[in-house]
Length: 332
Image: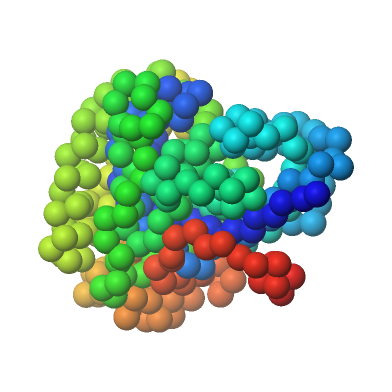
């Protein structure tokens, strides 16, 4: 006998960044964060709990993954199996419509989709808020991909895992868009987890970053509630640059930037100087995200074509929260 769950989850891009854990095992962050879920990037995952399986299997984009990679998935699946007292092994099939490990939040959509599929397959029926605490255990930013629009991940308190979860802030249905400049879609040399750990442990700038992020979060939520796009963009750009500044203070220093990253940032500033409001943010990778009004995306895209190839530019509207799919959806 087998039980199946199929879920789609979209990526999210943090506007107030999450960078650093206070508890590495439980993925509890040093500060609360806030993100925008994107429609253009997503992961679809099918979990089949099958009594005939002798172990867990993980197939990513039609390629069976190594035992080492599968063990990471097994550790995550065990969270659900422990809760439901199931011992059945799983076949996990995942299609990532996001370049993996390139700073485009592939782990966020991947673990949010996996959490949703396991929730469905096990019949656990967790609420979205509860499910976000499970998704967090796979990837911190995955907690935010459970919801659509603007989403806050509350840091919680102490080592209480249940107190750190995601909540929807605003549907972002007021002309919000984001354009990604894909400078390099290859796997990054320094993973986010290693980069975070090194920054927290060695950067003298890090404590100031945590305090600054708390203030930025309050200010950003005020801008969202006021629907003040200019203020929203200014805080987003400032917060992202400060995060990368903390990395430069790490020992040894960490920089995810490439020459084209700098070129992209300058180009966006040039466009802004032309009177089109647009602001940059970057995660742990060289790719640049441009927060803009949806109505300006086509114009910004056209202007960026002077310096970047068409396949490097991806425009996205606001994404929704996780969605359970049917077998018919999966086969399509």
